[in-house]
Length: 484
Image (spheres, rainbow, N blue to C red):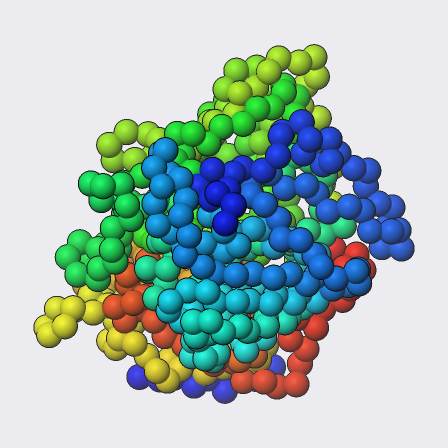
């Protein structure tokens, strides 16, 4: 039942490229902090992990790029396979910007099928979100210009929202890095896009399917990928004393990434919604849901090898390994900025329950509150509403990465999940509670980010009615405040 709340108040870099040399990036990454908002903008941090989209506009307040989705061939484990790629690479090039900048993306669809581009996590206008319920999918051979203002600094990503379980599995995904002038300065920033892919006996990507185990648990791959290459080959070099920022993104179809780092000191410094008020020392395994992001501060205190390790039922898998050369320096302390939260905590004024179920009486489908493929909003609230949402599993018994477009929320009562988020795991047993800040007006998808579950019905919509308040994309120019 719908509920309305009236509230008061081809270059074959694909599968192989991880950017330039570590030494080049480290040199470019060392900068001095600005004195304040009146100072000139410092250079954007160099990013290691994938190519970066070239800004074609000389206006410092505008980032203008071209993005093309096309079928191509790429090398995986020394074998050429068919993939879909943005600008010929898997992952696609990184979109890099500052808060307050206008971003113009001239998108061309060279696929044989319709598609859109969803800017995952960005609080932008609904007409630019890539939802096929709002934007007519871009037909083969046609183009569309995405035009929006970036509200805040954080790690985001982009991917299709048409046949997502198929198009994303075949390679259509890329990172977004929005950097603030007052971000902490690291020796190097690495973007680590984590994925898995299901290959058949011939080494090609298995065709999509929505029945059997894929329909029940979502598709799990048999080869782990980091930045588009076999994770076993994802390697880099560093030196003792170096301190880095690792921006982790989970773009798998279904796999919850349970991660830890060996051989280095690690702190969580940012979540989906940007920097934390203070870094959090990592003392246990990190759970990164599909669609989610975690930014880590990684300090090399000793020579040897540092590894990002994935817990797996068969055996732990190394997702990324760094060979750390000896050096005389100890890791330096990173000065931490005064972080102004982009959304201060505020009390919820209403509650809403959402339950997820799997039913097989007839066509197998995943349901939200007893219905699959909601076409009308499940919930309507006014702009500025703050709602405590109770997310729970019904009979399905599968944990779900719940993702909400266009809004941020905080997880209630779980100190292991600090910060603002747009994605959270709903456990197999027992609910999770979130407080959602509905500040961005429009009609917004809310769905399970196990892509097969969304395709089988676990997709709904929340409408935020405009009340005249400023939307997040009407923010201040970069550097005028710390936009985290």
